[in-house]
Amino acid sequence: MIVGAGQAGSDAAAALRMAGHQGPITLIGDEPHLPYSRPPLSKAFLLGEVDEGGLILRSAESYRDHEIEILTEARVSSLNSIERHVVLEDGTTVPYDKLILATGGRPRSLPNPELSAARNVFTLRSARDASLIRQHLSQARRIVVVGGGYIGLEMASVARSLGVDVTLLETNPRLLSRVTSPVVSGFFRQLHQDEGVEIRLNACIDKFETDDAGNFESLYLTDGTKIEADFLIAGIGLVPNTELALGAGLKVDNGILVNEYLQTSNPDIYAIGDVARYPDQQHGGLSRLESVPNASAQARRVAANLTGDCLPFNSVPWFWSDQFDVKLQVVGLSRGYDELVVRPDPSRARAITVFYLKGGVVISADIANSPKDFAFAKKLVAAGAVVDSALLANAAIPLRDLVPLPASI
Ligand code: FAD
Image (cartoon, rainbow, N blue to C red; front, top):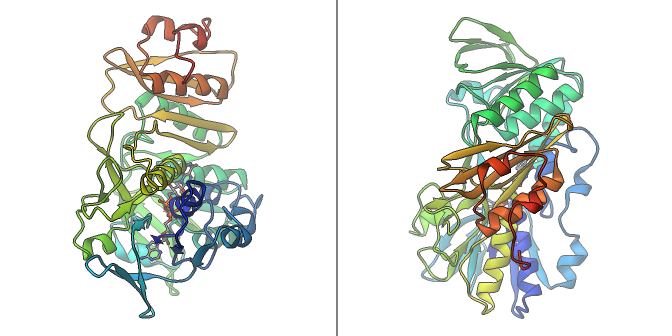
């Protein structure tokens, strides 16, 4: 049984069948839709380039053909790991043999609950959230985005592309501060400013005003600046949905803790995707990643582990983000880097390639608008390549000529 019918849950169900699992598979999700892809929610869907049907990961026939029973609008309210069953909100008990938790996360709320509760203050996680935002965007002239992370920046990009004025508030002194280096933060700040986004760093909301109907109208920053807007979107991070695991006594710490085989503290229960915090073979320590490639790779690994090909999860993380005409692609995690190499290439507009090294080893790269560089950077990171940083910085030398890599990578 799989609880959570999102990217990881749907991919795990499909991967189990691909791996030859013969027994029943039940995929339980609380949303009204079949499992769908979330990345377009802050991109093509908001731009009106794709509708809800276009987000669906697999058709109803595909689940049927593979004998995957899928329950939608079915929220699991508790998990009994002794009796091996889950209980749905309507009281139905569903037994399991092995359980995969793929419950994802929910958007972090603004610290001010009254502001969060205003009728035109939104967060973005689900297709429902995106539909609501799309509706409001079509009538808006100006909006406030709180949060200079990927979701906030993608929202700002979409809104500007639709001709809406955007003020983006970030409490930190730079954008994307949690995930990248100052040089890449600077690149995105310039991009957004060039496109007319008003960026306010070190920005703290002091107070806000609503109308009689409870709609947010304006806010004041602590420096006294007043900002008026038609609505506000907060993109300030994710809270993993760990309640079921906690209730069942599983170990939880900023995510459901799993071992290298993706097993929770109960060996018959696995956790994958945004909710799972795992021992990171690549970077050391524990990681909990919020990305489609991670959800899919863990889904495939857990399916293999459950069908006999039991190996530790060890996948090189990667990620992408689309903002205006820039596609950022990231491989590896840059945390703990001791050297940063910018590979300049003046021939490409709105492009940047930055490598992160630790002890001479390439551990990560942030690459904007250069899919060729990205394809090779993935290989360098996967191989743990040791590269001379002076050569890496020399854009005249093709990346493929820098180090001989084994053919298997
Ligand atoms: P989810 O896809 O969130 O699925 C979890 C499901 O479990 C949800 O449907 C939830 O409702 C359900 N659930 C939770 N609790 C219960 C319960 N008790 N009972 C039943 N069901 C339950 N990643 C990228 O790599 N690139 C991008 O560009 C990118 N853009 C994104 C843009 C947006 C707007 C968002 C929201 C995410 C984006 N991501 C992106 C992240 C990516 O979508 C997630 O990492 C991925 O969806 C994680 O999959 P998951 O299955 O772990 O969680």
